[in-house]
Image (cartoon, rainbow, N blue to C red; front, side):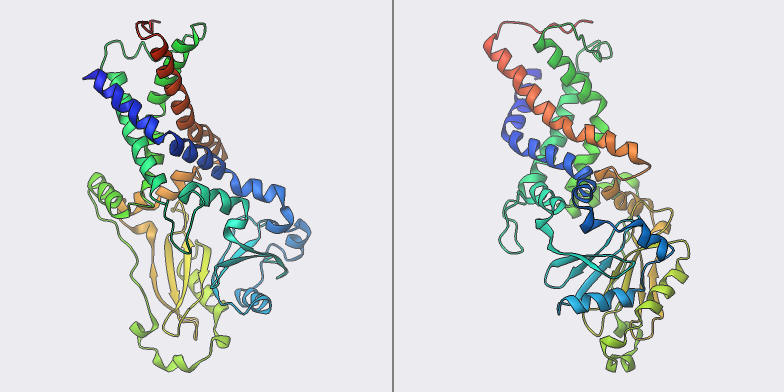
Length: 376
């Protein structure tokens, strides 16, 4: 049984080696990709401290940002994404799928770009669909999540192979003076055991972006609760047909934002979604202090600026909060900066497991009768 499990463990590794290494390296890069991007070209992604001080850390009104974008392009705005850091520029997504990086204090357009033309977008495209796309379709997009699934299985198999023999705790040591084959075997086992839970959850949270229904079902079973999602809100549901004669130029965007912030006084506005039809409200995605990311929402009538509905994600079920935490956990963006460095190390482990596993296999094939001594 143990021999067959080892063969399965090896086969999975060999079949998925290229894709596991790809996920490992690109995932590691993504932990600090935006920071690297801003460091290499600060003129596109950051704003000067003098401008922040001049505006007393107060950005332009939403309507002024919209007016500046309208001067740049006839394409309509899908959303305006704010940044919690005062020195980081805001990003605007347009209907033509391009983006605009804008100085939120002066309204100056810093860069008009396509997502995958940036370092972060390039690495993300490499990580999620291997850079190959046909329009909006990604033919190779299923390969990375399958590699994540194999990583989950490999971690479970590897743990079983470690835990089954006796003296398992004594084998959680590395004899640095031993031969390379022995040392790599011990490192492979020790790092695999210690990283099992966090690495498994990173892989599982990655699967959640592709196999949503299946992973949601797992979260609901584990937490014994149901995942709650906000319902779609339209202006027609509140019967404000009289406002539909008003043109988009008369949107009360600033009042809509202020009204939403009055509902969630302690929340930070992450995104402002612009109406794409006369039946759509202004949707604001907001982050409350108890949330790992922005999952609360407020909907406002764009013609009056009044709030018509809201969704407080911080008061939802355990399953909902666990589900919403997946993104922050996957990228290591929680608690404090040191967590990102831990995730940097964890992200490189699949590459180490693939390389060390193949090395051990080759050594065994070269000397099939030799036994690896793992005594401590």
